[in-house]
Image (cartoon, rainbow, N blue to C red; front, side, top):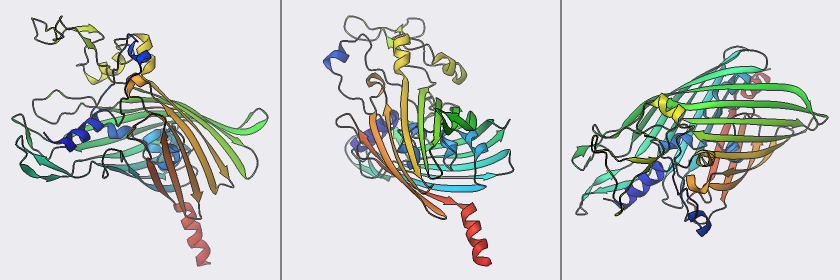
Length: 408
């Protein structure tokens, strides 16, 4: 109907993962390209520069204001009483010039055991011109999506914390235009995150003082979404994230952290449908639905879809392993003022083929901090090429101390 809208919706549906052309060796494999698509994939985009520079790994890193996205339970281990950050990410600039993500996040400690937080994520898909089948303009529109979060974290012991986040999701991609005789509407949903963190401070690794953390976050457990009254509803991107962070305290001025994360979408994998000798789908005479040759029916309730996602890939266990994304990175701090970061993210070619290195810098001033990250893809013609993320951090403790010093 209109080229630019098609690009937007395709990019969103594939979670900004651009499937590359398969090599001859890959094409010879019995399992073909089988990406998992969901509604509102912008919820999975790493919003801040610090973790974006470490290969999008962050479920077990030290607490900062962006913790709600990575693991809400980390908030319980916050060292500062209150902090805030603002991030901006120009997205998919290889496709179109005006897609961007903005992320505002905040936390406040209630006491030594409890912390609350909130965040707002806004994803703009730029400006498009709607046209009818004859090419006549129907007007301009700026598709957009946002998610509003509130979070709570509590220490259950000195080393263990539990956290939850509640999320309202709004997605307006069509401005209510009619498509094939059906009026469209914004998609809306509510979702929750459930998370936990283990943190062992002042331990020793290879004779070196260290802090070790491990975390888990099951995010976006929520209702399905639809953009028309009679359309099948799509899953939101329920995701399992597991990881660890090992912070080595080299001396009073130098620290070095190694982080690793693994991710798996907890939504059904598309099955392989049976076809006849002409390549047309075979329909079940009783229901009129396509017959599934391999895999399982993806049209199931949310909770069933979560459990089913661990064993429904049509390619069996081998394909299930391909659905696990691996990311990792390192972070070096000098005197808690200057940071250098690097990382790598890997997604199987049959599941989206996002593969990229990342790098970034961090600078901590008295009250403000600035983080930058840069994405370097390892595949050709990747729309994520040259992605830059910016984060501005605010330390309210330092601001309060500065005000008190000036008042003396």
